[in-house]
Amino acid sequence: MGGSATKLLLSLGAHPIVVKGGPEIEEIIEAIQGELNGELSPMLERVMKAKLGKSDDRFDDMEDEGWDE
Image 1 (cartoon, helix red, strand yellow):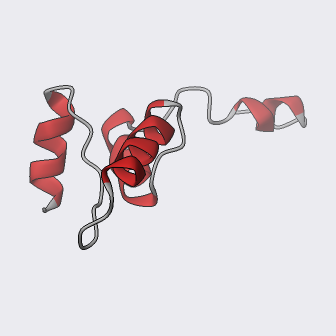
Image 2 (cartoon, one colour):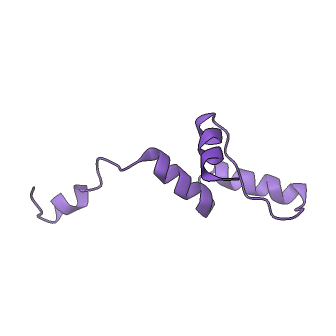
């Protein structure tokens, strides 16, 4: 599945997972539970970061270290 299909599913509230060649249903359930608990797969993490965009607080640490705009 490509990036545009993944983005569409995410916009609909569905979270796709990568399934490689016939895993047992228990393995799929464990993977889904892991993703629901915040342990995103690398592919889904990239998509979520792209969807969320850049955070406004990304420079906060720099201010704490004496940086000034």
